[in-house]
Image (cartoon, rainbow, N blue to C red; front, side, top):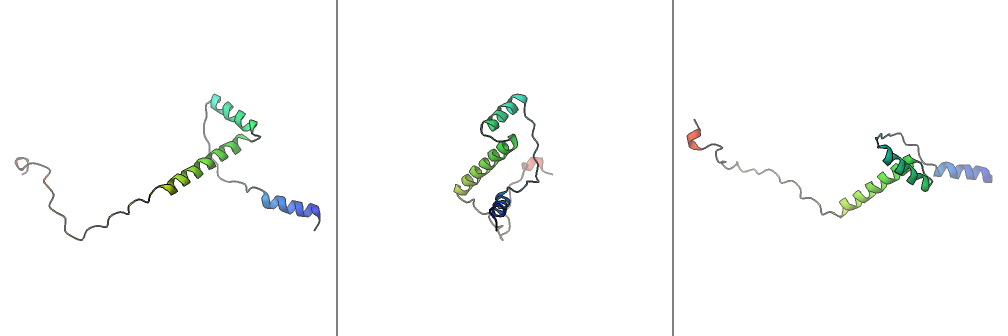
Length: 95
């Protein structure tokens, strides 16, 4: 296998899969410009910057949730008949 064909194979393997999902948000012009400048400083597109930010937030959320103690499982319903509940109205108001 030639060097060129090996290189092409490696590039295909490392290529990012094309994302099919889409997210549309509206930003005020000042926020858009600030994010666009930040992306350009790091040699990224605005879409790449947004994707990295969302990925980072999702990872931090997963780590936080993993550290939380497990929630108590819901209590099973009792097989005993329910206790008589107090009346909502006083005796004088009941007919």
